[in-house]
Image (cartoon, rainbow, N blue to C red; front, side, top):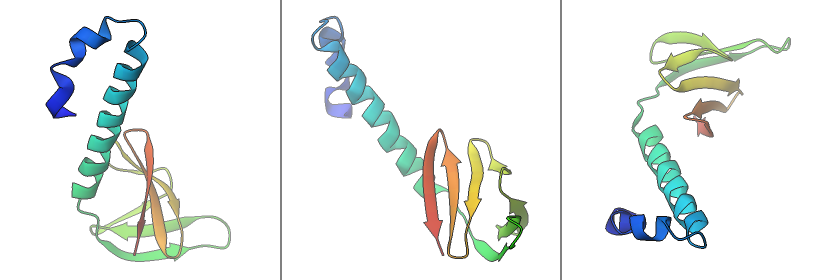
Length: 97
């Protein structure tokens, strides 16, 4: 994307090409989000999955549950015995352990 980003301004003014330019920018943003998520240090120390639907996990020494924020833009979405789902910048990611 970086190789063509500076050249997109011209195509951005063309009504036929603008949707393509918008999609390219969106895909570049999503790709950067994936790369940024992979850089986040997430160390799972343990998980407790309750029958009543209440679960918690020890991440980086901190006990968190579904709906808790680990850091800015990083929300715990679901806790399962073998993986945790997160929402990071609007994208759902799963980390298996």
